[in-house]
Length: 345
Image (cartoon, helix red, strand yellow):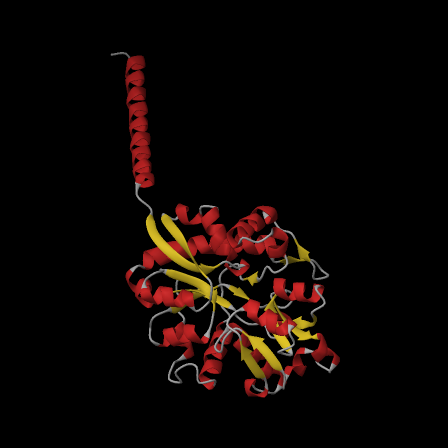
């Protein structure tokens, strides 16, 4: 056999080996892609604060992690941890309430990452005074002491926002009259009807009330008392028994958080919002999910931490506040309601 023939034979063998390896790799990849996606459910509210979840779903970030995630829509924050507790949802992402911490005290839910928060410069929740109350001297958030304030329910995020304001200005929630009205539309009706002096309302609602001449803006909660409004949570059993699932979910969630933050949370030197990469696309996703016009969504986009970092000190303060209000068991260790090991915090 000539040297040329030997080289040709070796070359053919090398090519066949390479082709075989490529075929095997392709087969393995096809098999991996053919694997059924692992199903998971997440409870959310149709609010812009759930934006990163909507983005992760719409842009296929969950699928890239091998997950088929179903969004379960709820109408109040308290319904979401109840769904996680009952097993109707694997994850929940919403505002934190006294009811949430009661479930956490029973070992039913645990916070695993941040959602949105009231942050300086981000108009998420506003204090408003009726025209009559404003004319009578209610000119600033600190003046809410002694006033009638509409809220949804005792134990709600609105209740805590009043508590934070009271802590800052040296009074307590007992120094105001909270009027629980179950939902925001009823709060608005009471405000317009003069049955209360003030209201704490979401950005879109508060801007509309001012535009209609129904009241005066006193300030923004994020500027007055920044706090951790919402969180991503699951059941401790899910963390223990399905940790790989939680890790996959967290990776997709963090990808969406970073994209949301880059698009919506940028500011220029004067504090004005700067539209970031993908702004229009992501705004459309959130508008479609919340069934709101894009311009309405844009007026109340909350701050999110791009790495899902939680304001731990505020979570501790929340628990202590609810304990002082008699809403949560005093034996609960505030730090026991969090497991941030997968979030990397």
